[in-house]
Length: 452
Image 1 (spheres, one colour):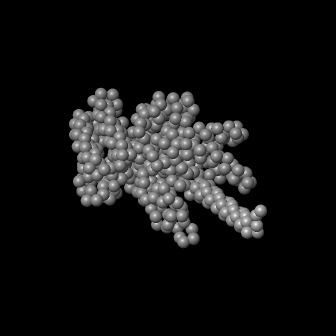
Image 2 (spheres, rainbow, N blue to C red):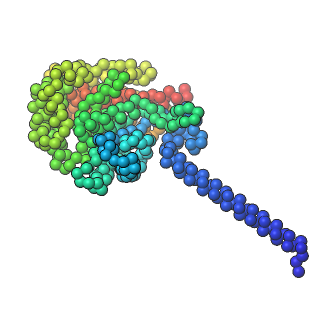
């Protein structure tokens, strides 16, 4: 028989077991709540931003934490959303936006990007890898838009514009004691937003900058053509921007591909202020397809614009600016020398000095070979990380290939020297400046942080 002492022991054990079970349940509930909170935080603050700051949790982020990283930015916006929203109730407006974004967000994530923020109907996304991911995402967003439109009345299709730009970004926490935000700040952000707005100007859904074109491994599979140059407020350098028209209807895409060289000839005449010839060439592009909106817009400009309204950036060759200096004397001197050589080559082509242009191209190629070898030696010596090093080397190869193709066209004598001058002045020079101020600057800052 068990006595009172055994009964008391059993009661105590039962009490302790119940207490332990209650503690375990409370701990489980607490861990579940913390996990749910972590998931909720991740929906409002992208964990990639927290990781980029070198933090394990949002709890570790403090105002002023910052890091520099090269990324590609994607801005997209719905065309005519203000007028559309006027016809919707507040609830209908939110339902519309959320349904639309449910088509767009998975595409960004599937291509290695993340949404930095929603700005009304606009999307700002970041892609830490190369520009390839952002470009594939942009094209798939246009495909997702077609699926979204299939759910809507046929007479109310939604159109969007997408702008891409790549560059060095400062990611950091800004704000005050009561309200902070992790965001990105740089000229690259401003340029990406500006490029997106230009999709309205040229009535085309997808534009990207020279910086993003540089970061794409192989642009050949994409349907791309030069569109214009844009200057961001407060900056001297105008940036080349390009149209990607893979998402166009098949007949329009085929027409743009067939007239791509003709379009480039027209742009060369336009940017060198030969408006009558440019107008005729843009008119010939429209004969390939009347819905080539950029060609139609340029044709109208040539017809209506006064000479003083044309692009001031085309008045002469670009000048070397302090903005391009990296702070490394040897690299800066070499960059200025190459810059001057490209300018001299463009000038010779503009003035129909073909034989001299061929000589200048050969000399430029030799100078570039020596410079690239020097930079690649610096990368090896200082342990430059594998991923940016691979991209840097690929850009060197692409630049050399572009120059070799230009020299081959000079030798063949089948392309107009004016078109080649245009490529040299507005494409080759822009490419080089973009490489210096983004890719070489990243290398220079890495070297500067290494122990002596």
